[in-house]
Image (cartoon, rainbow over all chains, first blue to last red; front, top):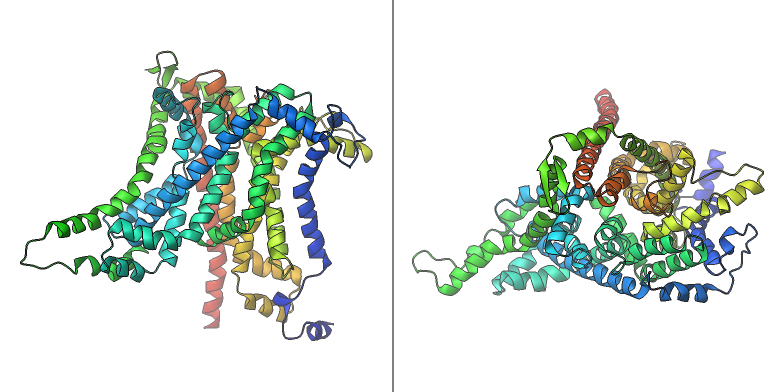
Length: 288
Length: 334
C-alpha cells in the first residue's frame, strides 16, 4: 500500500500535492458561515416589521430594503449622514496621523542613533500591553476640562498615534531600508527631515499602507470610547447603531437595515484592500 | 537591531568636521539637526502618550481612592472605600464570573477552529487569496453590527437558531434569560469576528515551517493527521502562545457584544451576561460614580496582569518541556 501511494505522488511529495475535495468543502463551510449572518440580515432588512418574527421567512429577499433603509436614514434620532461623515472624518484623520507619526518614530528608532533609543523602544512596546479601560475615567474628566465631550476631537486625540504603529514601522524599516541609502542622501547634503521625506518615507510605503488600513478599520469599528464621550447629536456609526437599536427594538427589519448600511462602506473597502489586510496580518505575525 | 547600525552609520555625520577651523553657522546647524532630529521624530508619540496614556493611568490610581464629585469635578479622599465596595459587591463577582465564562467559551473553540482553518489554508489549494479574504471578512465588520445581527439570530421567541432547534424536535433555549446560553451567544459573536483573523496569523506561522520536515515525516510513514500533530503543532507553538495571550488581553475586556446584546445594555435582567468592563461602564456612566469605576479599572488591570503572568509561566513550561527532550536526544546521539 505505501509503495503505491509513493508511486502516485512521484517526486513532488506531500507539500506540493493538490488537496482533495474535503479541504475545499471545509473551507466552503467556513466561508458560508462568515457570509450567512449578512445574508440573513438582508432577508429581514428587506422584509417588513413581521419578518423577524416569521418562522417561515422566505429564503429569497423581499422588496422592502430601500424603503427600510430610507426610513433609517431619514430618522432624525439616528442621524445617519452625520454619523457616516463623522466616522469617515475620525477614521481617516487618525489613520493618516498614525501612519505619519508612527513612520517618523519608527524611522528614528530603526535608523538613527540617539541616547536612550533602546530603553525607549522597550517602553513603547510595554505601553502596548496596558488595557484601554485603565485610563478611561480620567480621560473622560480630561475631555470635560477641555470642553471636548460631544466633539470629535475627543475621539481623534487618543487615536493620533499608537504604540502598535510605532513598533510595526520600526520593525519594517529596520529590515527593509538599507542604511547606505540614508548615508548617501546625507552625503549629498540632505537635511535630516529631507532624508526622511525622500528616503525613509518611500521605503516604508508598503507597511504604511497596511498600517493605514488597520487603523482605519479599528477606528471605524471603535465603540466604547465614542459611546462614552460622544452623544446622539454628534455620533459615529457604531454609536448611532446603538441609538437605532434603542429606538426600534420592536422592528428588527429597520435595525438590520441600519446595520447593513453601516457595514457596506467597510465591505467595499475590504473588496479593494482586503488583499493588503491579509498580507499585513500574516507579515505582522511572523515579525511579532 | 539599533546597535548594529550604530557601527555602520557612525562615520557619516563626522565627515565635514575639522579640528582647527571654527564651525560655520551652517555646520553648527547641521550638527544640531543630527542630534536633535531623532528626539523630535519620536516626540509626537510621547506627547500623545503622556496625555491619553500616562496621565490617565496615574490619575486612575488617584481617583480610585476618592469619592468623585461630578459637579465640582473634584474628589475627596476616602481611602480604600471604593475597593472595599467593589470587592463586596455581588454584581462585581458575577461580572467576573461572566467575563471568565465568556472568555473560555470564546477562546478555546476559537483557537481550535482557527488552527484547523489555518491547516486547510496551508494546503496547496487553488485561489489562495480568495479563501484567505473570505475567512477574514467578518473581521472588518463592527462588533456592534455583529452583536445586533447575532442577538436577532439568538432571539428567544422567533430567532433562527431556536426555529432550527424546533425543527429538529429540540426545545427552544432562552438565550437572553439563562446564564450559560447567553454566554454562548456572546462568545459566538466574538468567535465570528476573530476566528479568521487568528487563522491567518497561525497560517503565517505554518508557512514558515520548512517543507522538508513534512517530506521527512511522510517518508517515515506519517499520515496527514500524524504530520499535523507531530510537525505542525510543535512548530507553531510560539505563535499559538502569542495568539492566546493577545486573545486573553482582548477577551477579558469584552464590552461591545454584551452591551448590544439587548436594548437596555446593563447585562441582562439579573446581570447574567454583564462583564467587568460593562460593570465599569455602568458604575461610571450610569451611576456616575467615577471613584468606583476607577477602582474597577485597577482591579481589572491587575487581573489581566495576573492572568498574563500565569499564561507566561505556562508558556515557559511548555517551551522548556519541549526543549528538554531534544537536548537529551542530541546528547544520546553524540
